[in-house]
Image 1: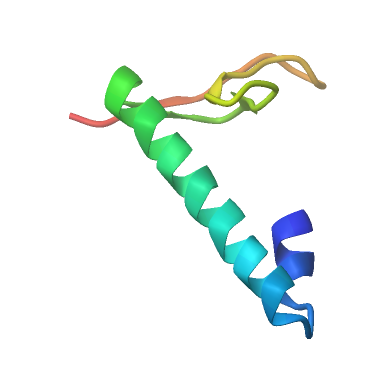
Image 2: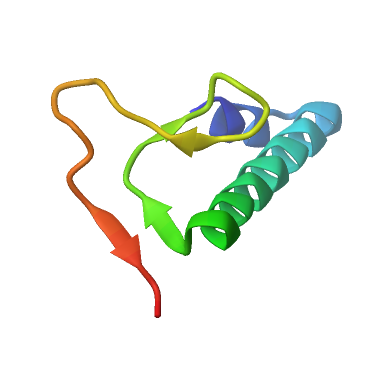
Length: 67
């Protein structure tokens, strides 16, 4: 939501910040995928490197393996 809000800003600096944040998110998810060979339903983003998340209303139920 934050990225989308920045992207819709009239300020080009905020639009650039949105692009950078989105790029970091996609690359971080790629890193997780390369390590786990899976895309996770939930991610813990409390550190610089996302990892498998949990909590909320239910535990992680889906793990999509590729290959």
